[in-house]
Image 1: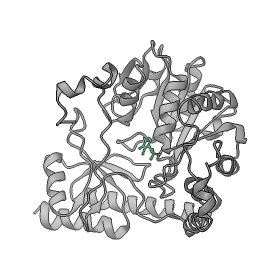
Image 2 (image 1 turned 60 degrees about the vertical axis):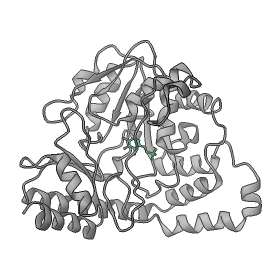
Image 3 (image 1 turned 120 degrees about the vertical axis):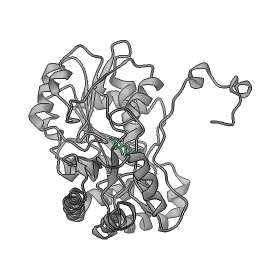
Length: 363
Ligand SMILES: *Cc1c(COP(=O)(O)O)cnc(C)c1O
């Protein structure tokens, strides 16, 4: 936006002039860089996913000419079957970022502050501003944990990432139930973008709680960040609210490739579980290796870790890693500016990170 003048900005609506948009992690154009900065999966998706995309292409005359199914019924059914819920309890969208946007619009009471942790997914404040929703950020405790007792106050809605990002720490289901029970007249959203890497999903609570929305994505645990498929699970009355928003915005958010590929992914559960297990095993090894060279690492249930080195400035460390061909995420924000968020790669990639730290940077 830097080269737009105030003069030119007069064409923008007053609300858009005030926006402070989300800044996605860098997608470098350089070759041979090790990307440990945006929590993508280091493994490809199931071969069955690739076959499903090719099958759509083989039929491309019709596949591209005709609109896709506006309800993405095949995809909703595949998710419903895998998650053991009814199809009326499934909503799908163009990435969980879009699902979250519809959630903000559909459920959050604008004039009563919604509550979320002070350190969490940075899209929450962006959507709050976009939808003119009041907010109250609740500080994490000194160990960077969520204290659920803080979520028992008057609010316009609750959103919690579980595991939280970028801290990687998860709540258990008993704690989530406390939040649900304390807010019977408000929607409680649990953003489970990373839940498949060892945390407990709240989807099993959906039939018990009429105020619960659980949001997940295929971007991380299913290696489909390039496809843009996210979903929400809730009771049918909440899904109907999301459908009303979606059909007032974009009736065809899911294209034919995305539907076919995601269906194939949900049908290949064995592959999915094996890849998640590999990432979790690599995570434990990387944590041990980093601790050995002096890092403090928060307890992670995600496909990334949040780590700090007491003897070196995190911003400088990120810069030096970049010079060594490795990118990690550094947030220049109060409380966390001495931490790095590092995505779990393959064992080989993680070893490259540890070797560079040991042999080039920390000597
Ligand atoms: C990555 C992420 C998302 C968004 O994922 P999509 O790629 O849009 O599906 C949502 N919430 C959190 C906490 C995330 O880290």
